[in-house]
Length: 374
Image (tube, rainbow, N blue to C red; front, side, top):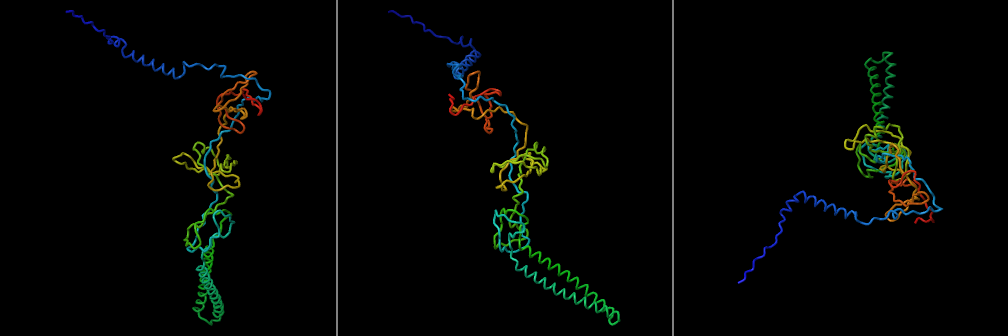
């Protein structure tokens, strides 16, 4: 019987290898692997675009206009947002308890000073005035009679025809009648004044903002009937940052802009309210100037406070070429044109601000409408 001797199996013992590499070795291998992946994603091993393709040189067309990239100084402003408010605005209120007989105006209507706005029922006031006038007339007659009696008593006392007591009584009657006449005269005057309160008139030339009552309403003293403002005297009220407000003086001229009307003008600082808003750290500034047609209370506006000028690199809009998402210009280098990508900023009239891609003093080409820009 033949017995085969068992062959021993080969086993790899990696423990010594792993122990030799250790934790630092694994860290180094991991870092190398991550770096390799990042280089692949970044295109380090990708084919490069030839430099000649990125800068394609062309000859300068004969009809091209060559201009220089300019460095200009541009005014800067700190803007404060505000709204238009009337300088003169008045709430016209009732001065007595009465019913409204008529409202003669409507919102937005132009009125003149003294024009009737609201009429209140004055029947009771008319009656009171007539009673006062009648009492005053009676008092006048009584005063005349008392004076006549006193004149006669003065003659009789000289002839000892009446007693001293009778003379004194006549004198007292004169003083009493005159005092009553004066009192009733004031009563008549007061009745006339109160009667005038029933006819409410405009205190100045202006525009009716809003009416608060209708015919038939009962109003009380102090109740607002309507509101007026003077459209010829308006102001722009804005909140200005503390650092700028402290530099403003009453009478100083600043530039104001009305967005809705696309109107700019020089305005004069009327008032800097001497109290800051605790939340925004700003002061309320009021400016006024020539009012353009069509200005109304509540319109949006800006106060433009001058800052130091800024230097900007600018080029004509006609020099800019749009190719897809790219903004390009043709830069003159020697006798050739090199197309270059630029980044533009603000539009300044017929020019653009250049943020990057060009330097002041460089020359660029403006092509005619029919000229080639390829």
